[in-house]
Length: 114
Image (cartoon, rainbow, N blue to C red; front, side, top):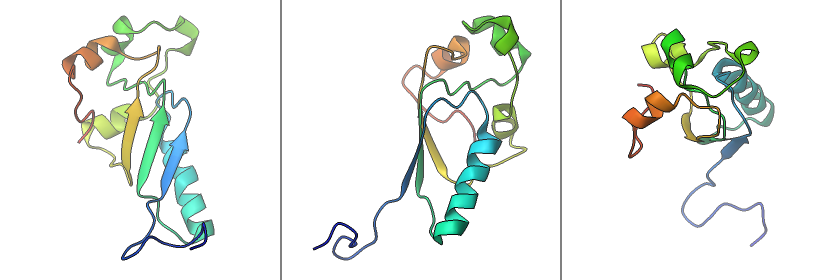
């Protein structure tokens, strides 16, 4: 079968891959929505590769190794609080600019937002 054909009995898994996120989930999800509309398809999984920056509040900056000029709350806190919901299952690989205190709370992994 050709490279574009679906596997027997199902459809292909569509994965979006993002480099560093820096807590800018709204921008990433908007870009995915635009691409879904353009391609008339649905993304099943978003994989973020490094510097996710799950910053819940100002206190999390105390546990981050990042220059002060880059310390911005950005949009992750809205997903953490439940004010916003991720439109696609999102998995991330932490980078060197994470809130290490929060990551230690999830030592064996887990959900960073509801």
